[in-house]
Image (tube, rainbow, N blue to C red; front, side):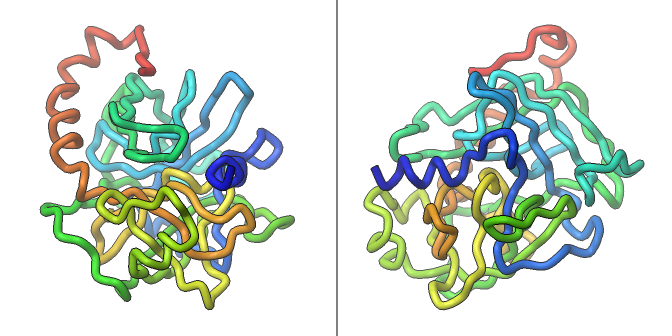
Length: 260
């Protein structure tokens, strides 16, 4: 039941569709050029998630952000305005990790192959991924960014970010029965009102310019800590998947989007 309530908090209905960063501030425009805003169509209606560009043809996000169709906006600061920095992309393939479990959000990671390559510039640029499986130390300071609500009742359309610290695994084990420190990261000081929240799923946890985590789930009331998928634990699957679906498949399958 606890996880069900958490999912309800993270997956917003259409009336409140963007990401929420609690305790953050408006980001300097285009200071996070890897950020992606995802418009997701599900059988229940429209919703939104965060994501991040990891290669010109791939965006990474959470597996529970899957939908029957997904569109991506790159290079945005205000997602409600048609900024000339924005690149709007269709998704050719949505590839969830084969071990994803919606009941406990284990292996909550998904790769989106874009219909076309993103144009790399100062507004749109991939973020680095970890090179090894070495874990983050508790106390490490990282950044999370997203669009939308900034409290329970107030929203914003401009990108916001917040600085958060990695916590010891025990902090999340006490709060979330399904927490797994080998595949997840516990983030956010319980003494501070700073946290990703509703609709922010899929956004990156960036530490020293490396995407170490993916927003997965948290408290239904938005209090820290939050649980992030540990990217380094999935490096073999990530590399294998991006090699398998390299751009040679785009021309052949361009008219046939695939959502596993």
